[in-house]
Length: 483
Image (cartoon, rainbow, N blue to C red):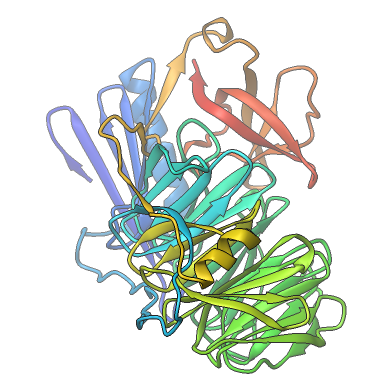
């Protein structure tokens, strides 16, 4: 511990040989303010700041936090002496399109860095890039907001109306509230490639071909190592988790009960999509293959002219779309007949999503592109007539949100927003859980809550809680500490 006139800092690390944990935890006390910083060794990490009524309570809380970590195996260390663990960032090439015509692009938004994450819902489009920026736009391309996260965004996933961003630092942020907060903290030995979330359960695929499953309480449930490495696909539903890697697609029981089926694909899997009855695997051998969720049988093959970086479908799988390494985008009917091939006009599509006769792409040049995929627009494009693509600009006044670094304290519930809900941290079987105190809620259900600010006995006020089908509550809105 190092001590100044009014500031004291405790820096701890947990580093295990053989690919285990590799993370740090730092607690700083400055008067009544306690700041906790934690994450992977060598990374900036996440920061949470709490103000206490007195300096004595602040020092006691800091000592308790540090003591809990020491009991879990952390030890005092010198910052910077251990090297950070490497993180794999997807290396892709993009050649010019060989298509004779260019897709009818309505608008294009350049994020400024290579982009992989995309999600489109009823109200907005989301795009995340390697610089850690997540932008939201309306369907006509107007930029609504920007989220600034501490590390590169691997992917964006939706679970009901909650939106999550998985980052290179192993943290998955909930972007559904006014300010993003860390909902899941993935173990340091997991080199994340892709994520999916289904009913609060996080599924992680990684470089080594492992599948790691974490519940809504941010606790490890089970893991499996598949037959292949470089697992760029993971999709989940009620019946299975579908894991795509360089030897094909493997389906596992959601409870970790074992392998349901394994199907070799034509080439290593580079991207995955799912519909209700089928999963779609885009591969390095220039195809998308549709697999039955029930049996794993290959039901259709969609042939492209280069390695497939991304794929998507229209509702029910009526149309199948693919983006290749040569900056082309394709459309097929459900049986595999190619309907058209067009150039993107700006790089290869690394992710895509179809919605309401529009195809949204994120490309190797870091752009979010909106393509008019209606029959009339595509027919005109094939004849050489396309609209002039509008180049969307980022407004200087665009609201920017970063993960909360401070928890605002309120003295009474009356000073919290109308309709706010009180939750309490409780110690159960050696773990700190969060339960609802306010009336009208199920008191036995846990609340998905930022781990860094959980303290036994602490009470918080949240703007709103929503029940999830898995039997827990999710937070919507701001979090305030109740003094």
